[in-house]
Image 1 (cartoon, rainbow, N blue to C red):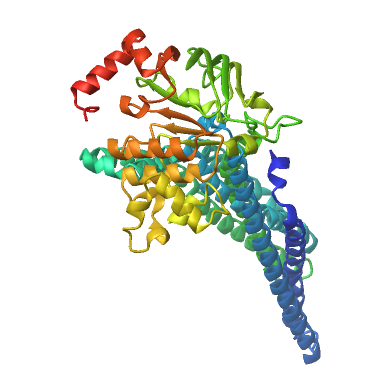
Image 2: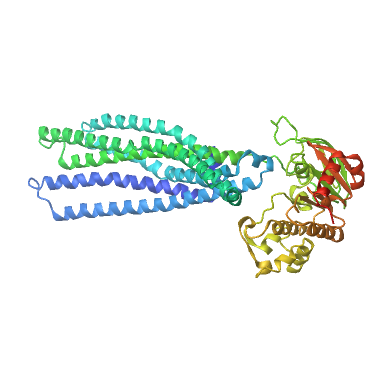
Length: 584
């Protein structure tokens, strides 16, 4: 896990090394200052016995000022390089996570929920960044300060330093108790974070549905439940961590009392020969430094406890291998739009007991128009998702242009297949920006021509800014039918060998649907067109129509043939005709 995370440090290795080096230098200087201060106090205390030359006082004063400036410089440099290293590490980590997700197949994405991926790229990365910052700075400073301060205390007075041997174990045991009891809470809280983010995501993306069904109260309660669970866990953890400060104060006050008692007793008994007043003041300073370093160590351990859970979740994404990869010697061009399904069976997960598709045998010629109808869950969308390798078949093979889809270069295959899915998605940006997803180099004239084919030009021209109209996130400022037509135009700009419309004209009227189909027939006759639809009128004039039921092909034929041979098709047709759907 550490090796995988440290791979994201990359160009920030230098800063990651310089930060702890300057921290170490800062600690050394800070531990020297009390020692020098003690020497000065001792000289002043002995002024009556040994006259003090002002030049000596000035020398010690300048030395202390110099040491303080050195400590300031080293501290500032360590903070500077620590900030560069930690922020750069987090930037690279987010970059690596994002690119890992981009390479995922649908199978991999199904494994992680969207809300979980968002949490991992935001909250989890922030936790790991904070831990990394503490590791290269505070986690270096605290142990060094503990070691150096304890060493200096023993050098100053071994007998008084016995107090540290009593107080330090008490504080250490208390800190271990605090860390141990808070560790498990932080491990469990991030799963609840996922649930919280999922509630937010669903509510915001489905705001229209929520308001249409007046479910604001229900969604508020659902969010409150998820929020309360996160709050309860963090409250429990914070209650435990709150013991840190009083424990620290108890140990610090106890140490001060012990050092003052033992030191004063030793000074009085020895008449100042075994221990001087200046040395006693330095012992108190070293005691504070030791206890503060222990407290900081406890905070580091707690932060690392939080970050370990986050780091594991991040590494799960980074370690996930895409279920769909390029072959060693991929085919780099699609010959034509012919499609052959040969003994194809498919299920979404290896653990799934039931196949989404079973024993599919199907042949589609290049340039044919094929309609697919069937009830909900009949396997229509599953079937077409195998063509551009959004999923791989579980059994059998799918051949595109005479070549197994798994033998193609993935980009080449998907450039040759344009899919307009059920959930039409537009991105923030202008209409031109969205259209150029299909072809980044498309000219304005080409976009207008394609939009006319998709019956989108007529409503675009009514916008004040026309093709420069800004589309809000998710296409919130255009209607469902307008969104579908823009998505069809975007797909057409790819100039694909195969065009798949997955119920992509459901929100347009029958007249516009007919105009789109006519444009397809006239303008892209050599493109294989697969149309999934609920309306018989959308597929009635196709070269062949596939009727699906329960993940299997129930029948194949033309409209007239299916009216004679397919009870399912005939029943759908008659119900729509009676409803007036296909009546002229």
